[in-house]
Image (tube, rainbow, N blue to C red):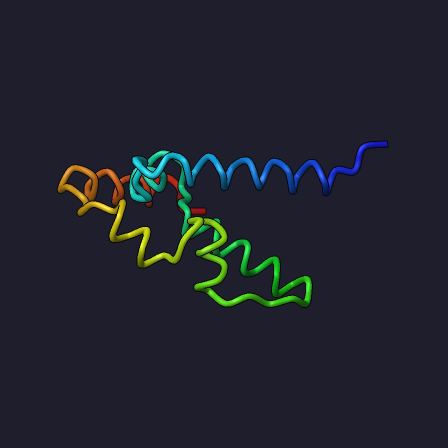
Length: 98
């Protein structure tokens, strides 16, 4: 029988690796298209760690997802959102809202 938890963990690691390699993709673009971003993923990681009784801090969870300290990633890769991105983000927030 396949261990589903191991498969899910492998898929998570692959997603994180992919997001680390695609630093050209901005978080706002992820939010517009998918309704989540790297910060969301790090928050979910932090929540899962808390639920498992092994809490991690926000900075540590972000470093796991970003592959480096968040402030460093922002300096190296984050650009200012354009007016078009901000408008698309506002529209997407309404679409993705539960």
